[in-house]
Length: 439
Ligand code: ADP
Ligand code: ASP
Ligand code: MG
Image (cartoon, rainbow, N blue to C red; front, side):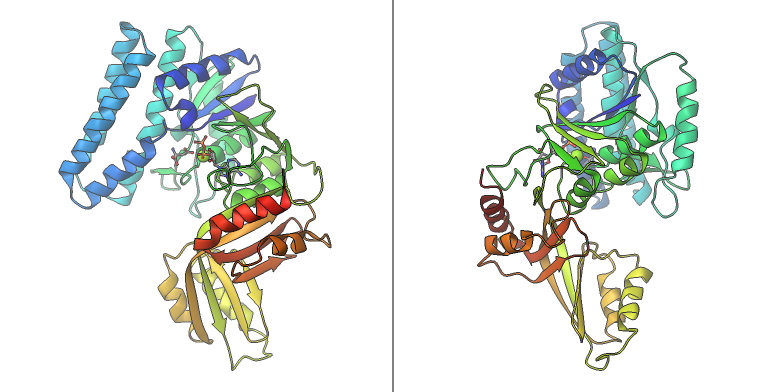
């Protein structure tokens, strides 16, 4: 079984949905097609939720009407007049009357998730209708029947495998399945999701549960590039990456993959292949456990970082200071990305600032605390680059003139990370590409 995940742009119009149906049907191998919402839909649904949270019902209603019109146009273009067009109208009526029901009711965090889930439910239902109208025998397996996270928000692998198996057993001998990315249930059985960009993660979790031959991530670019193409003009696709390299890049901000996608694939030993829906013949990027090539492979950037420095005069040369500091982050379930230490102080970075004021209050028991907001972590990644190569020197040469707040070298063998003010991000990314890749 092969997993084929298509992102928002890949299913972003009637024309794109038709192309994806034809492309997936042309693969003979048994397959599970995992779809995101059509591009823009998740953002629109979140905007509607935001209007409702602010009690701006008129604006929410306008936005819902607009979204419904857009979907009607998609249905008109996707399906021929007649039985299937009628079925698509019924489908849209059902989903949009559900979406409208939130304008009357209370609006809780859980209801927001039910609202946001409509994007993937709509794209997969329309895709299934188009397949059926075109004579493609495809079966929609509801992700809400098998995709689940536990109390710690971690995937419940056992539940996913058992329940996905049960869903598949309903269709003996069949080989073309469709499901929703992103959406899942939580430990209480409520509708939840795997966070923004989470369809990649769904594909990886399904791939591992089914022991798939490959997890294909089809997107709007010809593979994993050596730098962020939204900030740097001259970037290039990388043919091969190791799981470790791809995991570091995704974790440190490369938007092309949800940060958690690689770990399950690595554990299951399943290759992840990034392909371009707009150019299916392009080679793309293959991610396996094999390390290939030397030196820095790619640069990624993670924004929205806050740096915290805790300085302890009292604790000079004392042991136990670090433990106390880290314990506070553990208590508030706030992951730390980078750490640097000196004899009397420790600097660290976080991206989740939801509990920052309580963290700072607790840290103040152990020393003075300073924070810097609007920071960006820039990571240079390549197998073994932080093991005695001259990669660090190249990175620093490239960054001359840019104020560096923190440096992390040697924590991972594959990553050199620096922290800079976000206002220097674009300059830093461009300088690194020019120096390191020099195409
Ligand atoms: P999808 O909707 O298919 O999941 P995303 O928008 O989430 O697509 O991811 C693809 C986008 O990621 C690309 O269009 C590109 O702008 C951006 N991107 C950021 N960093 C990279 C990178 N290193 N390589 C390729 N694309 C990247
Ligand atoms: N539709 C979701 C989002 O926009 C999930 C995804 O596209 O992967 O974040
Ligand atoms: Mg994505």
